[in-house]
Length: 473
Image (cartoon, rainbow, N blue to C red; front, side, top):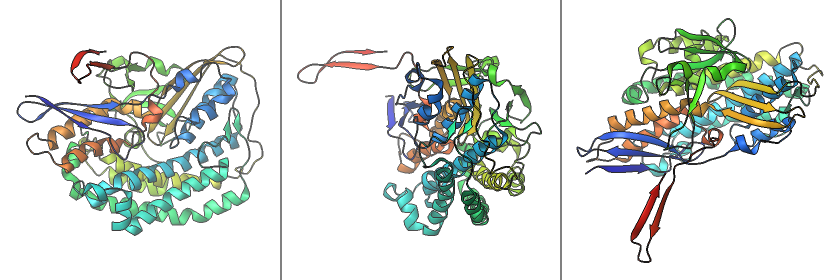
């Protein structure tokens, strides 16, 4: 008989989700689904609020990604005011975004995925976590904590606190950079850059032991989306939104930010509260694409910083047809972490970085604004509409994890069909199903905002527990 295997909850991710595997009579996986089981609803919560509240309000969506929402929201509000913010404010926002990139990538790699990579996918469950990593490899754990501390400290010094700071506002930032913050951060660059380079080298040394995972972790061709500078180099804050195919050939060279909805559609599925974005001209689900560090390094020609470009060249020694595996999200995440450290150093040495001109003022001058940045997990879009008084009338948030949901679902099925067999279920096999989700580093708190038909299952039970009736929607 057919049966269903449920993995609930998926561990070491941000948010709540489960996986169901539908097993056939022969004991093999016939289908699999990733169910996102939480709803945040910020799109509706924001309606009626003054537009100036939006950065701080949407930053509350998540305690891991507040900086990303703060920046995307502020950019959308800048458009509502029809103004260009001061050049130094742009650099300071970029500085904050790179600090977020460093701390988030360090969190994903060392805290969430390293227990699988270093202790082994088949390690015992009680030790396959950050505490087990600290016990088994204390120096590796310490270096991961140091990298995250570097990013978190810079966020705190810029914004006043590490989580939910309100430093970024419509029109710029609240306060200029302090000399002490610049000097203290520059003093730490050499240390953290060396840690990042050594971590990449250590990860490369792990690849041979994970060939089976590389071959089965969402290893299929897709399109990729990310932002780049005009010269094709990597850009996280204010780049050209570009789409490439599985061969890294350009599909859309420049998706207009204010017309992104002509290119990106959103579908819903009955098994998840998460919307499924797709490339509209290709239709759903054929228009599947991926975002995030792996996607960005498919889209970009170069990183644009020397050490990261050397690491990227080494990554590209892997044949192009093999670089689709989601396992390489870990690899590209570390390259971006190194790139972020280098860009922080460059920005702190800009001659105007201490300028006091960091904010522009204006009233709402148009009824629509779009803010697009690259968050650690991928392209983040905030789309607002407001009335003549600046009150928000409509909000649409397309979050990195949403862009990746179709690929995650397909990847879960691919891994399950390779490792899970009904007659010999093992903890390691089920952990690999979770691990492919962790490779994408999803943030489900950020991604669940759809309002519409929600899946529902109601059972009517008699006094003795007998099922009398049930309704499914």
